[in-house]
Length: 250
Image (cartoon, rainbow, N blue to C red; front, side, top):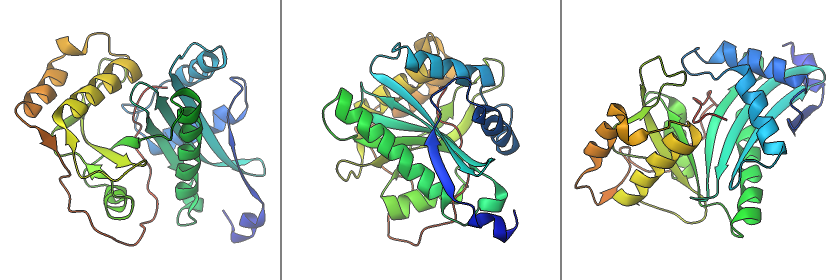
């Protein structure tokens, strides 16, 4: 994007209408950033908006934010709120290459946090406890989260389940970014419950306890009373935003 075009005001808004024209542009951007193994179908996103609008999600909620300069969509981000655990689970976050290093990714993520904070106050009557997400171990964004936001890159082998039920699960790092209070570790029971909620409620895996990969994660947690971070925690300078992997189905 030419520099001059950045003078066009940037607007960040939530997609609330399943027929919103921004959905097409958002999905094209997601397809440009994420592989087909990581990406839900466009109709799944549309159905998630319909489910939310009809009040079918109960203590869950789902948000899609888009960033636009005029008629051009330049960023998209999604998050799920899980009232059962009072957490937000970051899904997709993607920014057009022309908008990288402008802080747009950080702004989108801050707006995601605002969205789930409102959900937490409405559903649980208190601030949201944490943000959760999945990233590749080599992603520099993970180090940014650990160094700047005091996130825990949880020290156990984690797999993202297959989105379409056909591809193999993907080995990732599950991070836990405390919001309400600082944490240095989670109990083994907290992590096991977190895994079950992510797989069963967000990915909609019907029987996690019958899944070999899910059982492999539980086996790795056996005997572990506390789960901390696999990366040293320290203060550091913010890194350029990089795309998030999606964290859960909408």
